[in-house]
Image (cartoon, rainbow, N blue to C red; front, side):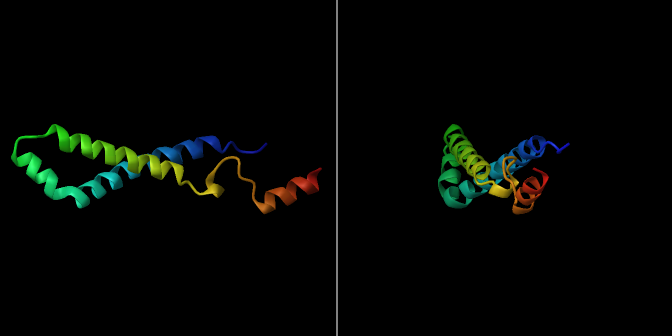
Length: 88
């Protein structure tokens, strides 16, 4: 019986999304820190938080969609293909 690869794949997606959120938020701070500080000094909290959420979600989505193809459950390596050819 072959092991199920879907739980590992879903865990990989979750971890990549969380790390992408963090990296997207960091990129947001690095690219627009002056605007964020200026907005905070004028008591505007909502706009920087929305901006941070947008960047974080974009980073998480990009991280999820860039999973290498060999980590997907539907990938069959050359060795697995050869093994399936021998078995049949």
